[in-house]
Length: 145
Image (cartoon, rainbow, N blue to C red; front, top):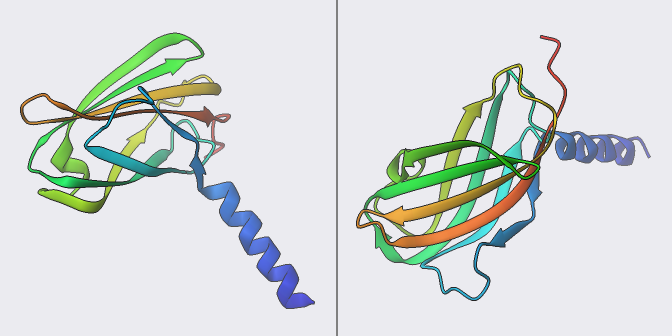
């Protein structure tokens, strides 16, 4: 019985720290070169003033040697931020087959809590769209520490 309680507490604690979010493709009919299987956010909800990690699991039958990742952030329906990053900073290039991308960001402590939506596009070095996904995430209250 004690082992079951401990196991249940560990599962509950891990679900509070990291969780996969629902991902939608920007164009459900498109045949993107990169398929995204999951996005995990740690912690979830994101805490202002603390480091947030976005782990993206993806696959491709191409060899991606470079490009960029463009991230647009909306707070409800208001565009609040855009970032562009070198694709090879978040993964090992050339990326082929199954690969993972990691994006980390510390949000300012004054970031309002609530529901946000990210639109993330990956482009190759020639500017060709490799994938486009959308997912929601929440920002919690400011951390005490």
